[in-house]
Length: 318
Ligand SMILES: Nc1ncnc2c1ncn2[C@@H]1O[C@H](COP(=O)(O)OP(=O)(O)OP(=O)(O)O)[C@@H](O)[C@H]1O
Image (cartoon, rainbow, N blue to C red; front, top):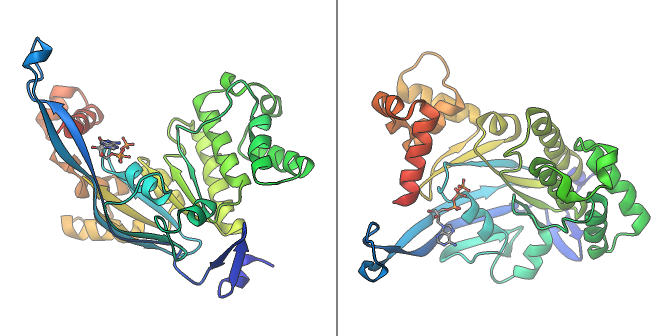
């Protein structure tokens, strides 16, 4: 029976009872503060002249967000805005300093083990046995989840093919594949374990346009056919528009906007007094410090993109 038909019932997944009528993810007033030590005199020639100062970085600052079952939500933010920190707290890798996070009612701190069964995180730093092939790596993962060898083999082949990985690559060492291709193998691995909540940390960064589309189709399939709830961080506005039911924009750890891409575009169009609907890029710039880039900055750095990179680097240093 399709899970949609069961939404008011409970679902048993990996021996955990899930009430799919509950919100999939509830983030309630969550903050994470890091302590960073920095030399006070950066240009000091001798080490002894350096003084260390400890500074607090509010990587995530009082964020609240509720995500419904089968929703795809995008988290947009510049480098260092706190996206990965938020994802890491959701996946129990970091503990919030303040606030609560729950997944279908299970608390990420108190019910850590249960949450780990419900959630799967895909990030660029995915760990693999690089000398082994995608098939061998995924068979290893399937074994951990008690799948039979033949069942897993068929499924893996199907998954990798759907993600656009050619047959001759499936059994070749992973280390010979590009970073983008390895990223796809990481996505396939997350899928193998049928996550009920999937956290995708910049899943298409570094992928070519064709591969991006493969991944986007796959993500939609995951939601449509397998009822996954998906949280995705991205820098790519086109991707956010193509994939997400709603997007949250975060800046310096704070959530500065939340809504459908259409709603956000309309709001900013009205705020700017424009006639034509602004793009999501302009929405992003409006809500983040990107709008502070001046003509002079563009001249100085050579292009808007370069000026934006310089601004991000400067903010990261601060
Ligand atoms: N383990 C850590 N210790 C100290 N500071 C950290 C740590 N992890 C992240 N930070 C700081 O927290 C802030 C948010 O970082 P985070 O990695 O969450 O941003 P991000 O939005 O994911 O960036 P990117 O797009 O570059 O991946 C940054 O200032 C970063 O330097």
